[in-house]
Length: 220
Length: 149
Image (tube, rainbow over all chains, first blue to last red):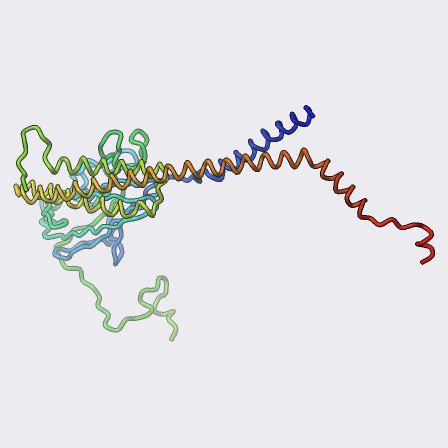
């Protein structure tokens, strides 16, 4: 009888350990890689995404409407800020650990829940371009505010900053401040005071947009 | 609305910012306590609205429109206070339901273990009693009768 009781207790403890472990595994949240991502896009495609900024002329007076999008997959709600900077050739861009030193033009802030994305518009207009020694003088209107910039190799820099409750401040990138991962984008552009000459096709040619299909190979 | 402030007292715009951050902290705590993403959504929307009011208030304050700035700041403070309270309520609810669920699930796991142990211990006895019952039900067929048929 005593042996039976001992065997019973050993079995209960063993089975309890197994079923508790299985329960813990079922109740535990699934492990996932936390990340945040940022994108810049427009209805007509972005200008000059890569250096050098070829085929990315922005003409004066023509509004440029872009959309900034941020995705949060950090496992909790985040308080984010996008810092938009206008850069030229004088300073370096951001990198994965350090933000750029160019002046901040706009800094929209937003709360975003886990697994969600938000989009905000970014509208700007090149108002004038004046050639000067060593580059150009630009007058822009960014989100209704006037901005002046001189130099060359112009580009927009977008940086993602997140709020850290420990320091009570925003820091560059996401994750803990001591080991944050920087998120940034840049878009190059060539300011131009002339209007771009555009070929206007009144009757759309269905083959004109296809890559690698020269007119001789078109089906008759 | 009285917008006079004693010296040294933080202005409404500063309070609005502090309350927004406090509300954000409450939301993060609530999420750690197990509040679902669906329940968080209205709080995030309200907090974004509070942020808009706070930004408006900051802009108006820079333009020396103190009364309008205070109005917006107070709207922001009210919204973020509501968010904080709601997040705390949801967090407490989620925590207590999580504790209840854990007790239930671990209790079931323990009961399963006890029944499994009983099944293992009593298996030989159950097997022999089944065999006995089967034996008792088996009709006795005598050799002569069988041959006669």
